[in-house]
Length: 302
Image 1 (tube, rainbow, N blue to C red):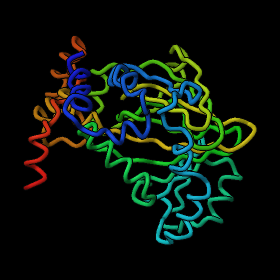
Image 2 (spheres, rainbow, N blue to C red):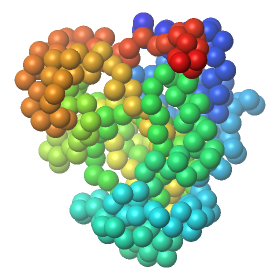
Image 3 (cartoon, helix red, strand yellow):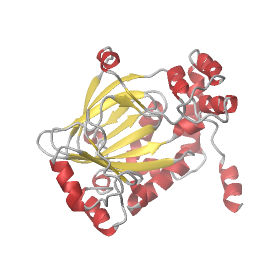
Image 4 (cartoon, one colour):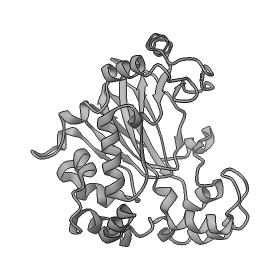
């Protein structure tokens, strides 16, 4: 609980305004901090109190804003800025083809999920949110958008090497939240690699169904296995606020010191010693100490 206490101190007692966390969670920040690094948690919009955000979350990104982005940003390309995926299929990247609204509509009609990577670069409110979250959490934050047609699943069961806050903005999506991959197994893969779960491994997992409605939030820690399917009655659109906490954990720091010149996905022989130690203590999954406000001020002046 040391790191959670440190985070709580950083976002409350130190006097930081916490605009990012407050924009998402309102007065539910303590509940988020309790789950931070440890377990997934659903924040239904039905549990909002009078000071928590609701309608503002709907406007972070919707079909109208996506359409405007694709029309205005004519340089967006499939395979670079935009992905289209369908569960069980190879990604349809359409290499170097322009990501026009007409093409995207046809792909959605054909059952593909439409993904815009780093969408915070294109939508000002999302950029502001990510910048505020970076200040709140002292870690890099990015955002992607996912639009899925009715009754479709975009991705097979998998886990990510990032902490994620899912913000449902349109439609309904039903998630299966399953077991968490052990830290030593994550270290063995390397800090940048996510992983698809095979059928046999997934069949042995315990999962909980979570229905996400507009303005619901879902916190997913690193390594948590999950997949999702949109409701049959209409499309689903959600934003992932991606928190790259794994870059700043003790485990990653020590593994990179042990094998500093090995690219992600390659064997990391010395890091295996870190993996064995991590299997015995959850402290290795904790985030590195956060900057004090004084240190932040010095950095800003430099």
